[in-house]
Image (cartoon, rainbow, N blue to C red; front, side, top):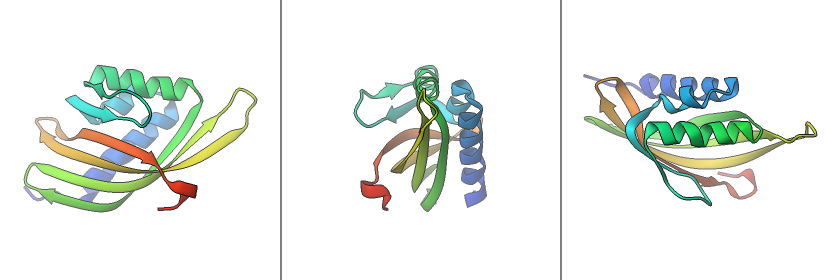
Length: 130
């Protein structure tokens, strides 16, 4: 089966829309059951349920939007590697927002449910630059 960039893009849009709705479980739905999440500055997170909890904690801490942009994508058979950049916007209790740039790598696997994130790692972009 030929997989197009649009397949990955569709799931990334679902991720961003779920984040904007404040739904950590829906964010985690794009991950495989035993996925690895490697967030900066904290311990690794493993498994869809734990990943849902991680993303819900980011949302509950004021995360309002997470925009992702694929800059490079290689698909080989049942595995894909995506490199991209993004912007995370957080609102504090006073209503002020801060947007931070990030760069990321996601390894995708094809599952019985379609393409899913298998490994997700990111860190900050210096001065918001790529």
